[in-house]
Length: 157
Image: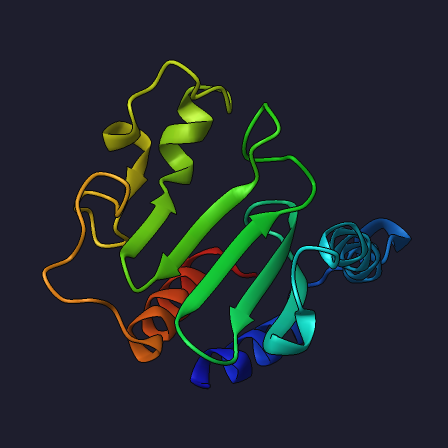
């Protein structure tokens, strides 16, 4: 998976230890807490999981990529992007992609409860998200990995 190498290389250069605070360590702890909370409903042996501090978002990002089948999720574990309990920034599976348009979410101060999906969710390329329009063909793992790689290039660092 090419995106794994991209994340590892860029994580080393993020400067996540500013102000003598090891943000990557905090992100790792939050990720482990998230897994512990959800492992009753999910077999994490079937996932590749990694977390990192995104200086662009000033947030801890948690990524879960299914090793079999097609499913990738990206979450904000620090509650920086959304003002409510929502934390899903990116979701990709056979039925398409939901990617939060973070600039739009932030323009609403994180409160998108009254904002239509079409205004703050995309398919990662500016089109409608999977929740509103499925792609013509089911997505494959490689499609989701390519979409994740685009997301990581934009928001990591």
